[in-house]
Amino acid sequence: MRRPLKVLIVEDSEIDEILLLSLLREGGYDPDFRRVDTAAGLSAAMKDQKWDVVLSDHFMPGFNSSQALKIVRAADPDVPFLIVSGTIGDEMAVLAMKEGAQDYLMKNNLSRLVAAVDRELVDVEHRRARRLAEHALLAQQEEFRIAREVQQHLFPAAAPALAGYDIAGASRPATATGGDYYDFIPAPDGSLVVVVGDVTGHGLGPAMLMADARAYLRTLVLWKSSLAEILEQESLLLSGDLGNDRFITVLLARLRPATGDWEFINAGHPAGCVLAPDGRRKAVMASSAPALGIGRKDVRRVPGRIPLEKGDLVLLLTDGVLEVHSPSGEEFGEARALEVVRRERARPAAEIIRALLDEARRFGETSEAEDDMTAVVIKL
Image (cartoon, rainbow, N blue to C red; front, side, top):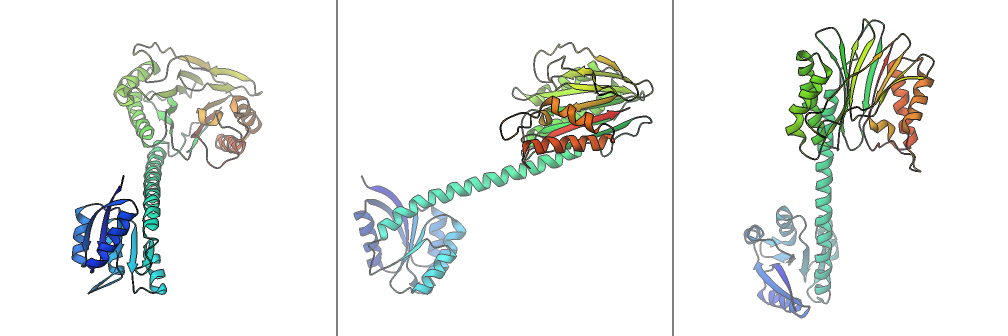
């Protein structure tokens, strides 16, 4: 069976048109064609339909292949453009190739015509696939750029300054930005609400969801004194946004600076911990409730309490720190994270976090982390 071929012939000679069509038919094609020989006619033909290939003479009355190529490329950057001429010289042909023509053939030797068309029909599919991939990559990069910008605006501009406390938080975004979040929210009763969270997934969607979660939390802290009530209302407000395929892990805590009382609820988040002055793990803040967006709506969230004392250190992380993998596939893990914090605990909180995140990144031996890495450190 003959292969269908939409061919646009830019040619002022009807005889040459007949010759080209005859060769294409002999080569197994069934050409659906149009012939034009003016710039206006070519522009109209390019607007009327998509062509599989354009065959263009070089010299025509008041018109040439260079002008034709510009018109064709403006309408379709990928369609194969082959010059078929009896007068074009090598220098002019090379220039045409540089300008975007795929090939040139001499009219006195058209034995390569069918092979050239065959080749270009394959190459154009590759070009179009590559162009689509490049556009998709650029769109993804732009999405990640916007997501990072949204994400960076979620984090506190500065850590709170509380007498007797050294508080810091930091987040390093991954190449494929996720939805990590940490915050320090002053409450009306003088306490400080501390939150670390993580939305599943990467890109703009999770970043926007975390922006919603942050806005809800900051409002709820002003109106609700109970951590359980705050999370219950947060879960209800987010239920319509999360849908069925996303959830948010949250470790929500309240620090009362005057007494050192630390109250917390862990909803599906990696466990936080408190290290005593001698480095032992004094307390663990394990998950006691499902992440927001998972499970029943009537979940009972009961806060835990830890009395913080002078010399204690609170460490909160997202899973991006713990799940960094070495080239051999080994996880960084909690034990390594605690080892770094114990080693650096004499330094300020911000420097402890920097050392921890640097160590995790070195462990992965890559400048491109798979997930965001976020940590909060509170020292008494």
